[in-house]
Image 1 (cartoon, rainbow, N blue to C red):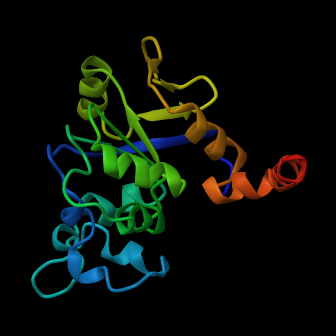
Image 2 (cartoon, rainbow, N blue to C red; image 1 turned 180 degrees about the vertical axis):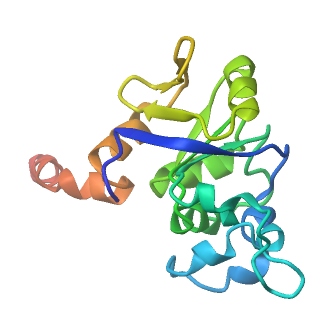
Length: 190
């Protein structure tokens, strides 16, 4: 995993509540344990027209959103069944974070374990972000706040261990492997 301390980007807005994991990546794409290529399946049923061509009106397909890495989503993002493929697909599609007023617990946990940053902020700054697609913002993990172009920053909560892992570019296993010498010393003394 890459170290994530700060994410700066213009936003793109998906103003839909209750986006579930099957909408993020449909179940028919869950036949792989390899992340590569899942970005093309992100939001597949919304992203592609009936003929299989990209729908130019869908936000991931719009030219102005090409380099944007922060998605502002409606309430209750990532609800539905548990699937690690959902944050994998979003990461492969070029996204690094999602901001909402609520994010489903299982999706949030899967995201944090895979280097995708789920951010929950209060309704007022969220409403402003939805009304201002393309706003240049920053998500600061060290300060646990979203820096907005106007007004005070929007604070968010982030589990301390998950924050440590993101900021140091390690997953849970990587963290444990870094403790190998201490674990071995403890085992030898007991």
